Amino acid sequence: MIEISENFSLKEYNTFGIDVICKYFVTCDQESELLEFVGSYELDPEEILLLGGGSNFLFTENFDGVVFYPVMQGCEIVREDDKYVFVRVGSGVVWDDFVAWAVEHGYGGVENLSLIPGHVGATPVQNIGAYGTEAGECIDRVEAVDIVKGEKVTIDAATCRFGYRDSIFKHEWKNRFLVTYVTFRLTKHPEFKLHYGSVKDEVIRLGEPSLKAIRQAIIRIREAKLPDVKVLPNAGSFFKNPMVERVIADTLQEKYPALPVYPVDDDHVKLAAGWLIEAAGWKGKVVGHAGVHEKQALVLVNMGGATGIEIAHLANEIKKSVFLQFGVWLEPEVNVI
Image (cartoon, rainbow, N blue to C red):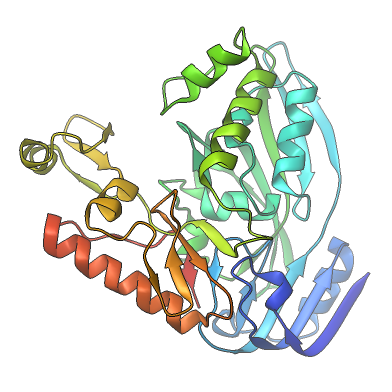
């Protein structure tokens, strides 16, 4: 079924809880109806916004265009072999519900991505990641509707050009391909990733390593340091961990020995953005109605009644402060509209 609303409030459709209006809001749970709809209009990608769970957006003004909100459901095994099972999941499925399903069935690959907010349809766009795992590592293919041509397409993982919190859907194909289903390649013989942060220690507290223990450990870790969006509106990690040349990281660590770094390749590392922000004095700081979470400096929060402009201003002040102190420029992980 397809529904079209005019002058629609997006307050309940973004986890920052920003009350902005879009000109048209289109929700649909059937590919066939979506194809018929986009085939009837000439749509400009510049006037389109593709919205999932709204957990990675900051709206600073009304959107004078069409917002598509796909809610395709379903989670089914479409094929398997001795090593892998391939699971086709609707774009409207809550991401953590899918992770719970995979763990319950003993399939590995996404357990480290437990409790990340949002819908499945956003995973290939953002290439969500946490605790040493990225969604792109286990995506096999993406089904989508080409809004410009009014056609259904199937895109293999290689074409998606997955990078760190990045994909082709954020560049050349931005707001052109509306994801309807994602097929994940999950392993029947999981190899546990315990090396990132405090995951290993938390799993040991729970007993022997297992998919369920890893999921439970990560949920505990995230709940201990990340605010519930229903209580304190936020979009999770606001900034990416910046990638720098190893020689730059070495110089910084000489001055700041506690600075965490994560290897990327022989010449590059990632710096912990949260540590940089905290070291610059922003952790727990409140400016107007916007603030930095008291337990995790990577998370910007709506303290109540904040506008998108207020939160964006706070983000810019943090970026300037970190650059002046460390010479490192932070990039937002959140899409600012």
